[in-house]
Length: 355
Image (tube, rainbow, N blue to C red):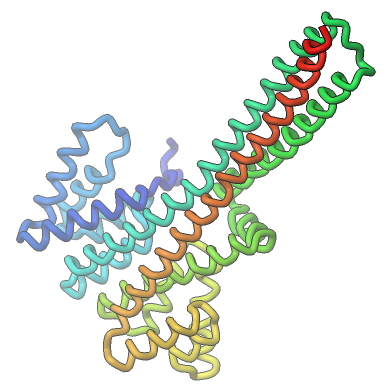
């Protein structure tokens, strides 16, 4: 790589980030120094086969400076910018242990949501591919064999048996084409979500499928509530939390909601609770929870609770979609295969009964 060339950004998964934050929090609570703790992580990392060594790079700078923030900043291609800023604040305020513990909870939640979304996409996609393969084998290999058998038994193409078999073949090809198009579209969508067209693709899906739009809104609410709860627990005033939140949010819908709340608070001099209600980010019930939490001094805890509730609703919604798609595909497979086999067996039974 040429000097000055940009390093490819390789940030660890949510599960890895959560584990790292949890380990740092445990080390600090036990009285272990950052240097010794990260040295242990680096030694374990070097025993593995992974070519990427974020902990080793981290230890090298921590050993020189004693600062986790400086180490992350020098290796920012390996760490989320939001985590880097939160670590900086933790070191300046002396609350690094609390912030790392909160970050661990936050990334753990992100990991669960991402895993649920991957399962919701992968399982129906695999089932759809299996449908295509099974129906394709029946149409390409099985039906031609039975046609030859019927022809050898003297059944011509104008007979009712051959017509029935032809109808079964057409039905199979039609269903095969439809399922193939759906599977191909799903694969294209998954690929597009990994590119710069991610936001446009997600907006298209939201407009096309109302259940996806509702799940996306709940996901945005969970992420915003989790971020704000984390920042409020770390001692930020709400204005600063809203200003920093977009850097940690991965989807444009959540960023737009936060920016709308900020603009309403500035331009119309609304309170956070009033601007939140007008944004439509939370349901009315949760807006009332935020209002009560602010009045009682428990706003961070209320935000965390709302994030957990919306996360559970997202996971339940994804499970519900899977519970609808799975039996639908299985029923479709059963009907199509049954129709193809009947279109084969009925003519065969008619021929055999006349012999």
